[in-house]
Length: 338
Ligand code: UDP
Ligand code: MG
Image 1 (cartoon, rainbow, N blue to C red):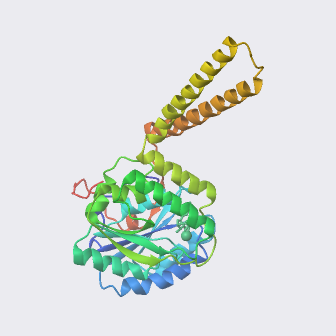
Image 2: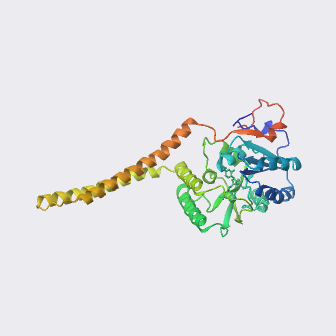
Image 3: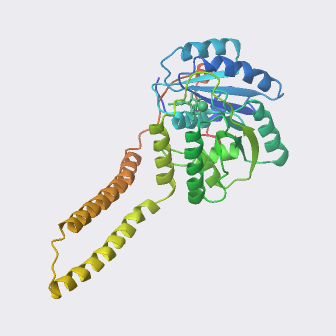
């Protein structure tokens, strides 16, 4: 069965867990067993009911087999499998939409986000009655110089777009309350960028500082091309100001052209016309370049409008282990129904 429909929380066999831990997993055959071994004792020790939602984002290595094995030994481990690879943000979306817990924590599968901090986030959220607890990266010493620089520029720009609500250096390791999850679920976005949308909600929030560890095994699935894509998605999701750039560039070239026209007229009037093909050539190249940039910018937005109008789901779920044990669906609606 392929469906992008989210089962309502009340359709699932009780009891509803207090905590859901969402893990996007893509080709993590080396890292996953280590992550599970470190995560389980922590969750077991927290003294609350929980579920772990492993989203298999169309892995092509031994990950699905490992996940099945984990589930056999760990009944709280739930498997949601995508029909194909749909990307980290899509996996997060599915996890957030399908999680049943009163609190939902998202964490990477490579142990870069320390699972020990989940307990800290949960305690902080309960103690201070917070809707959001961000995992904030205190030290990126283990990241490459390039990743640190590009991440620094990214967060600087995002804070400009989203405003001061946006915590610096907060990635996708965070805790959300049921209220925040429901608010996110009600948004019509097809390509949500959660690290911007969550601060944009403006719900009460706290922070837990952690040290970003090195990937425990395997290699990153975020090459430069995906990072650029995430940055472009983030900007176009939150701001139309790049479109205004065209107006400013146009205005600037008009002023330059105006000055040049006066200059040429004077040259003509006072009898020393210069051949001047190089300046003409440069002006042509400049204006051509500016026009292409502007057309490209328009294209970025039109492309996104196009896919928003198509309204295709960002992912298809091929299998959800929670639905196996689910009794026949009821028509009963609930406050948590999708
Ligand atoms: N991931 C995913 N789908 C993808 C790429 C990555 O679900 O297409 C998962 C991956 O398994 C990991 C998380 O998203 O749990 C973050 O990815 P990664 O560690 O490769 O990114 P980085 O930490 O290097 O930015
Ligand atoms: Mg990683």
